[in-house]
Length: 215
Image 1: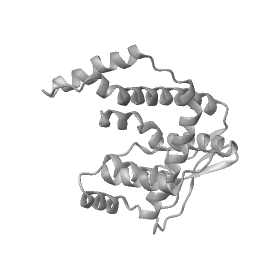
Image 2: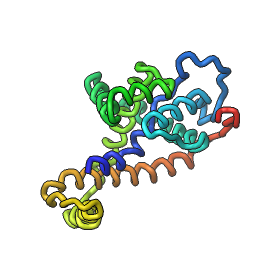
Image 3: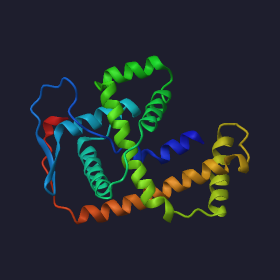
Image 4: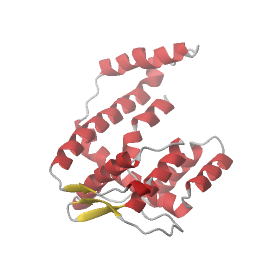
């Protein structure tokens, strides 16, 4: 169940803070213009590095740029609404979850070194992820309704089927209910956020200028 829940929140978690990578001596260029703002190629590179750290692979630069444009939309609305920043304690918990997602502390350190991201950059990314995901949660969770039948259907068609495929005894419905409920809520938040983002982007002036040299 924990793996499924983590997958359900990936859409939110890929909204990452992006700034220049430490020690990079490259000429930064504009990857896109969004209204009167810009997204830089260094931001594309950093999000690519973060995806490689977390997933061992990354999307292509065009997909990453689209994520950064979506991030701009969410951040702009959140800042306009004066949505509160996450606390230091919440950011630290996010960092701890990231480290625990690796098989060992040594693997985390190795992958972090390979990514080129520093501890301070990763902390800034975690803080920005929380800010954006918390805002989306606050905005859409109240309108997501999950009924008992949806929970039971997911239990039978998801939890039970996967457990049997692995030759395992499935947990009881009651033991799984809270996790399934949250999984389905996160799914609903993601679905509503996707619709909102598409509508919001259709009203924006966006000019993509991403260069092939960033790859």
